[in-house]
Amino acid sequence: MNLTPEQETLGRRNFLKALAGTPALAALGVAAATRGPVKGGPIKVAWLGVGGQGRALLTRADHDFVTVKALCDINPTSLQKADEVLAKKNQPPATHYADWKDMLAKEDIEGVVMAPPLWMHADIACGLMEAGKHVLCEKMMAWDVASCERMTACAKKTGKVLEIGYQRFYNPVYQAAYEGIVKAGQLGEMYHARLVWHRNGNWRRKGEPPSPDYDPSRWGYPDFEHLLNWRLYWKYSQGLMAELASHQVNIANWFFGAAPEAVQGSGGIYRFKDGREVQDHVYAIFDYPGGRTATFSSIESNAFENYYEMYMGTKGTLILRAETEAFFFPEGDAGHATAVEVAAKTPGGAALDASESKPATQSSTAVGPTPTAGGESAERGIASRNEISRWAAAIRTGAPLLCGPERAIHSAKACIVANEALKTNQRLKV
Amino acid sequence: MKDNPEALTSPQQVALVLLRTLIGWHFLYEGFFKLWRPAWTRDGTMLGPWSSAGYLRAANGPFADVFHRLAASSWLPTIDHVVAVGLVLVGLSLILGLFTQAGCAGALLLLTMFYLAQIPTRGLHETGSEGAYLFVNKNLIEAAAVFAVFAFRTGRIAGLDRLRRGPATQRPRAMEAA
Image 1 (cartoon, rainbow over the protein chains, first blue to last red):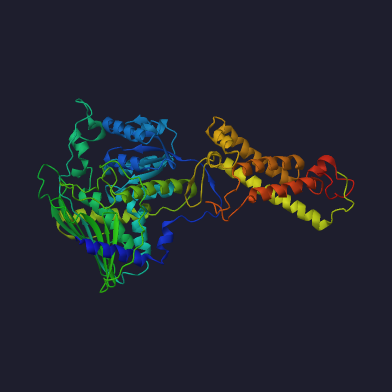
Image 2: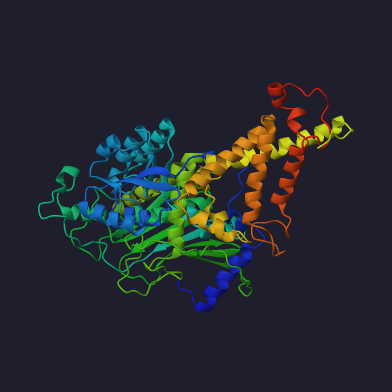
């Protein structure tokens, strides 16, 4: 799915034209308060797991909404880098911790933004909520279905706000696409979605341990390499399905208004036979109720198509590309266009390239249309910033979350079962 | 000033006390909201701590320099606090009719400061304003309304001042107290 410049212009204009006059534009704004303000300042938070993704979120956070009191990570190098992020944002330094339980005992915090390796999500998130803390947990929700259910039950039992880091729900482009195109019925009957996340590069990271005698074994990692590349090992990770597919499947669930009933898959370690356990090429077919199907592919050998979601309906096609741009092509009527600017183009965005879902391209040619100085589109930065701010608002005012654990668990289930289907080459019920 | 021989009628008294009460509510909520912040709107927008700095920095007119210097001074936190508390006290005074004359004087002082900081001399629609003003804006009109409330000694008509001093022996008379 690579569009010509003419098609891009046309599709973008069609999308904006289709939105015109719908409540979608209004949905991008903020409704007026009707019941008076709620007293309180920014949420006092800790950042737990300040590796690449944790620091990306820290960079994007709006400190009118959250004040960072503590940083927690088992890797001292990551803590130092997180300090630098705070310093660049003119934020006061935060106290360092290696053990989150130690942090809980000593810090007066209200919530935690956490981005540790997947296998730790449920234990930490539940521990935090049971200690009375609100949690914003990076995606995927948890390593297995039972853990996802444990987190959901824990949030319900404790009454704490639990959000899972699916930033697309907080991306104005996605909100506009859903409200103005999908919900408005402009796609007609929709039977197929194509989910693509193609990269050309080695997922394996290179790095030096913080000190020659650094021993991460007390944290469950036999050596520093397993800590650094936890995404490549099944004990800690659910591979590409968790890190990439779960984002796109979650949106497919949202746009279809349903969750997959069954999934079949194929894939393997075809290119990088370097001792990793998770596949470097995965293909999955998700069957939704009503004869609707979403296909997902993620390859690490070609980045020509980059990443996008394409929704194909009887009346039109909606393409959401790289979390940045939206295109709409009415069926049989691709010739009309109007120009309205929709996507927020405010400054900001991350200065880090550490996000797991950033395209791992070998060349530097795959760049979004509104790049920031850090090489990332402004929209992605805005989405994460909105996500953190809305989570903070939910804590203070009870404002609703846009994703929430109930949606996140459906995406996680589908992707966890997809991995089983991939391993066994079967069609499995979700 | 000599009493006006015409005693105030009941509707006139009601009108004056209603005017005082509404002005009092305006002051009270403005002050309360400033003290209440930082706060959040119900839909999740963060409202940071209130400061008069923006208003002072935007000052124009003949006294602009004075207000600009205040905005940059180390007194700013004190000014913020005094203004917010002052608004609340004035609001309570006017609503309750307690120390009403002092409350009116405080209201006049605050409104005068607000007016002098931003005198509408351009006659154009200003950002954040719903209309175009030349010399006369809502601060000035509210100040004139407070002056009327002050002049008629409305605490004697209704309010806790009556308990403090006892009711006036005679019905309030127009312009009695000015």
